[in-house]
Length: 137
Image (cartoon, rainbow, N blue to C red; front, side):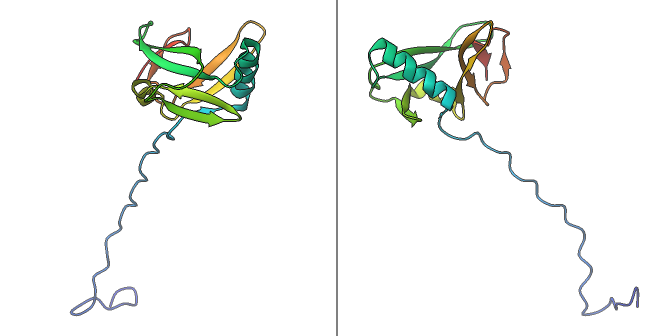
């Protein structure tokens, strides 16, 4: 008898301490989010352009200091294989090749004293340059 319990024939042995299983790493959210600040600016630019029903195309191209760079332009409609993301009343079009680099990204717009512009908060970026336009994954 040890510590008030009997260990012997027919009695279960105390089980060893089991380490908890670590939680799986969080995957980036699928899709592209459009922050309200970006939606307001896109809507304003499209209205000034006279095409309020158009959208913003975001692409990832080779180039820049670290290998890849972002490219944005207005598009009147999506292309055949584009993924279309709509939030706050505006649309963003992304081609399939660019999408794999942009999964989980949030598009926002920042306005400051010295500079203003769209910002892509991309969870897939491993390295970027100082200009903020070039990155690697």
